Amino acid sequence: MTHFAAVVLFALFASIVFGITQRQTPLRMVRYGIYCFVLFTGSAVALSWVMFLIAR
Amino acid sequence: MATTPNNTVAAQKESRQGFVYLPLIAGWLVPGAGHFLLRKWGRGALLSASILGMFALGILMQGKLYAGANEVLDILGMAGDLGNGLLYVVSRALGLGADQVQVTTADYGTRFIVVAGLLNVIAAVDAHNLRTGRKA
Image (tube, rainbow over the protein chains, first blue to last red):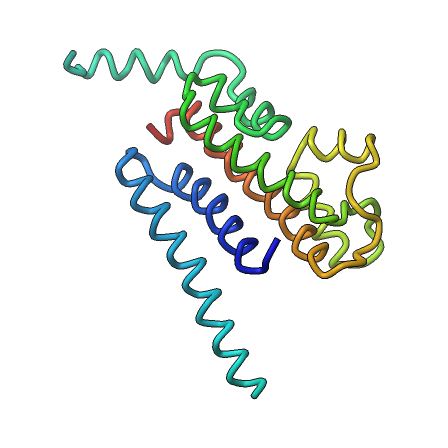
């Protein structure tokens, strides 16, 4: 499994649980789950670029 | 059917009968079981699949199952692992998981297992909130 695949799977599972547990209605659950997923993966990619640039 | 105040009160009374902590305990022991007890089938299935999937991936990545608590970080890791309930007990009994992290992905696997436990605790508390009527 690649590192990126691990990040995506981690984000997917965590976002599903966050969405269901932190919101009341199904629509809000889906929207919050997507929001968390984007934040998880986006921040991982952004931090990876930061570390790449620091390491150069 | 419209919800009247009487119906709401009756539903709240009904939700307060019986052992209130049963969904919390069941949800902790078996991921999603708390929601299944409350007949929230869809939510329970998604929670169960997510937590079981994360735990299984952690094991497949040769993640470490914390067995002892000698240092502070080990205590925290063990607390996270214990959140998996019976999954942790059964996995320990079957000898799954690594004793020591030996490959790069095993470190990720260890985190997957710990986070699966923490997510399971969140899901169990959510089931408890549904049971007490704090959440719809």
